[in-house]
Length: 232
Image (cartoon, rainbow, N blue to C red; front, top):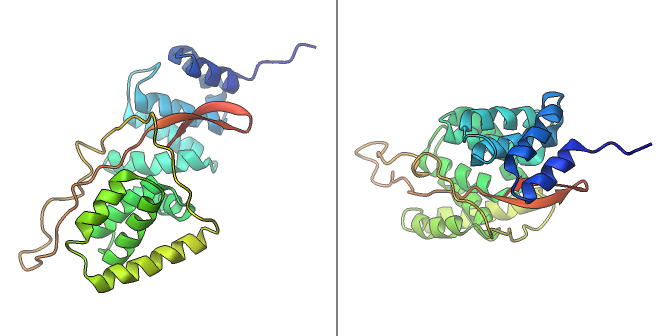
């Protein structure tokens, strides 16, 4: 008997060849029947506008379907998509899940949220710890953010943040490895990832917002023997 073609793998192969519409067509059937890899891939296609018109709402929806099945990369991108689409309160639980797993973009976005008190209680110690972890992973925006944070966060809070960052690393049960960011496409969360430029109150002289923007990109990685787009 002739082996039946795996449409998810076939779509990944088409994507690598630059045949984006063909890739999307290959993924639609499996995605509709609940394949999380195909669902995630469609989310990527809609986010990047490859093979289909860019549509962040549809990207979010496909990420959600895959994330609810425990697809790690979909969980990561779902939290980021929720944030970008203005659903920041909903995004927090997904960003926290990804950050605990060591995902540097989630750590960076969540760190800026804690720094600015955006949809979470302001916590500069936790913010510093998350940005440190993201920076250790090789995210350049996080390293730049640390320099900005040093101007506003006290030495005591920074020291506590470093202690908490070490705890985060221990909780993840693995050292944080550098992340490859070659050939990634920058996309902005809104026009910029600046949580809020307004000060919390006139009397709060330290209530500055970080004008930061995390990078969200894509590269091809083999997962379970299949090649398909994985977000970096």
